[in-house]
Image 1: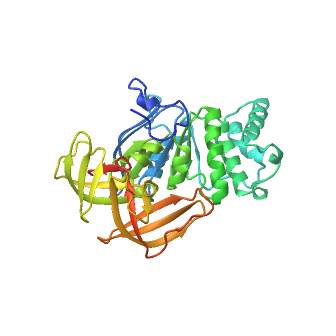
Image 2: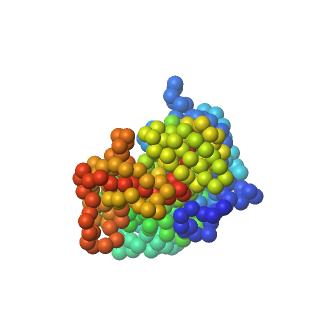
Image 3: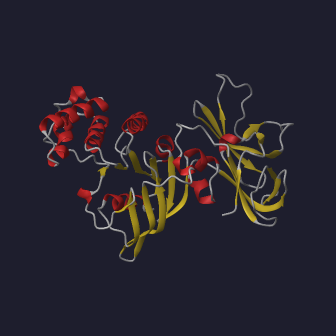
Length: 379
């Protein structure tokens, strides 16, 4: 199967049937009184993987992380790390370390003392501690701030101190709970790439919890989309975006347009959907769906062209009216109200500095897209 999207590195153990998962959630359920936070969930994470748990608040992602760390015990099921059942093993005896959103640095200690704290607790020799702290400071580019205290650092620098302290003990797995939530947008974007590079350099397994889709898409090798304590899809960022497994995933990750209707025909060369608004949509494939089935055709805004006249080469073209326009600099976003009342979002890259005869409010317009531009969903 041809990969969707760009591949960051030659690393895909989940595609190898003989590869053994490093972390396994085996039919895990977690209840808090009458509330079920995690429901019969099974999940596999591989060694040296950067794995993201993505979902809205209350979906169970932080509960999964806390169970792996040992702060909570499963109500049912097993959690295994490198083949060992973690049941009954306290947090301080697990080969994992957790970095919290608040960073939890000791305010009265210097940067180097914060990094050295866990190593001293383990009884490591003084010379070895100094060597390890120096190595960590160099790794996170904070050598010149070694003698400063947390209140003398910026948010990004405190984040890197917390990260250095977390990896100083060389855990098998590093757990990150919303690690970049306290940073501003620009610094968050820069730190995402720093985390990726650091994870590659250290060769550790990272499991990150986030509600930020862009964060998960940027950093992770694979993403698990969670909802109400259950896994909706586990896939690479490109697969989650380009080939969502359900209407929920398509709607949760990024922007999407949905054409609901019935499958009129599913042939070898193409399939046809009779949309509820009256349009006929031709697609390359509708999978195993049977004619007459209720389906949705999901298509991303950037896959849709907007033009003042019907394109002569378009297989799929629907007429409407420009309802809203947003100029964002690098792109222009159009809301096109179709004649059946549905509003479609389309985005166009502004590749040229000047656009001749731009479309604007209340103009009649056509949206068009290729047969392979979207995906047919049956659930």
